[in-house]
Image 1 (cartoon, rainbow over the protein chains, first blue to last red):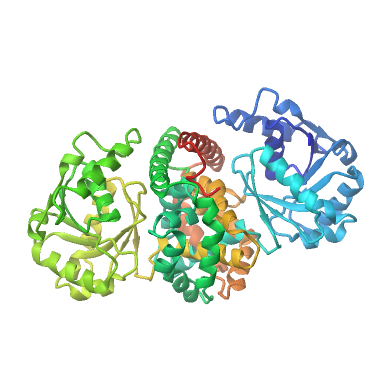
Image 2: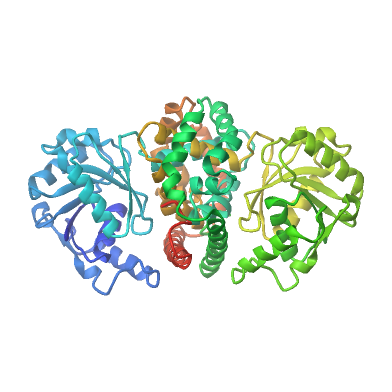
Length: 316
Length: 316
């Protein structure tokens, strides 16, 4: 896969262009403004990333071209990423035009965060080559990318897109069924709803929400995810952890009107599925690496924030 | 405040000892094992943190002493941090003994994550000098610390503890009312409940949960909190953001049996409260600092994980 077509040149489309171009792929953007704002925006982004390893090589910008017609932009494209505004009628129109202009074997992806793929394919003649590729914004900075297929999406489409994303440095996660908000925004939403409820109920001040993340979980999750952390925080691993401490999950769910998710069978299944992920390294070594990693990340963060000369980048 | 008493020498108690000792305070730990395991554990932790700026100075370990009797351990202590196991009867017993042994003006704090302060003070004669000081574990790595008072806690107690924690490099956040799970574990719990539901419903595989945090939100929240991020992601700031995109919060809440938290009046109040926090810096500068910061943090993280020689520290 060598040629990428980009449709939609806002924050997400421009960011996708950089993701692919810095990995050595040729990127063609459909743009009526030919070679103006979008190109200089991407150039400025590249310049701002100097020294981070995320700016690619000297030819990154040269691998991106802008084209006035859709036919021209999609010429030779193996993979097309659509990132136009979140309007179903607009997406239907754009996706059917992409389908008509694209090569027969080209794969078409949408960056949508808010429209389910089952709705998007209503306008498509060949849904087997379509899926949602939703990044956390902006993808040139944050690797995680969720892929949401429909039952019509072919296995080959999912496989090729997964390989493409890994090759350009993203971290694809496949959602096996569609759900409103997909995974990333649902997880964020659940957390924010709890934060908002704590503010509403006079427990937290608004300005105290962000530090809970920036001075706490953000630092931890930069190094170790929540399930891996649980696995290290009880002698018998994650199942032991959830049996000992899982009561809080039920309390939180019920206090907000929901039902508990955890039960003994779920905990056993979860632990069994994670066993091969966690069992390849001694817990004592993993704990030492976690602690050293968090300490180093915190030190790096302190230097980065000090360089930025102020606390305006965090809300703390 | 110069002398700290530590009661309970598990992971949390030992970590608190390091937090205070590396900041130059004298720390006395109540320990029946006099000068053995706890001291060498803390020494090993200090050694492992060399180069991170979290190991204090050459005298850090020397400022920590172990004492066989509670009277001896609390001698001269201005502030006492209790971190014994999460058992109400045990906590009642230990807190009343601390109260009897401590100086009249000493402040007493509990590290509890699971017992409400209103229950803990049942055993205390002078609840005005008591509050919960709950860290994210371990506090010597993660600065965030939630303080939960009772209506009996004196304003002076809260003020002195807040100043102490800031002085030793922690980031205190005051919960104005008690609630099961306090804030940190409720926010984590809400998020994990959503993750568990996505796994239960066959949308996510268990091994795909952690990367959503380690390769996504963790990196973002290392630099910018979620509310500050919202403020930069709509032309009119956070109120504009929540009016445009807040629908997902209602969808997530209702889909799990809950009620929406956001409404127009809440959004206006939130935005007004946050205005002084966000308005001190130009949004374009804040965006540039956010992007540069995330890029640098991602680069630092890649180096840290590569140094740890493997992917075992994350679940990815």
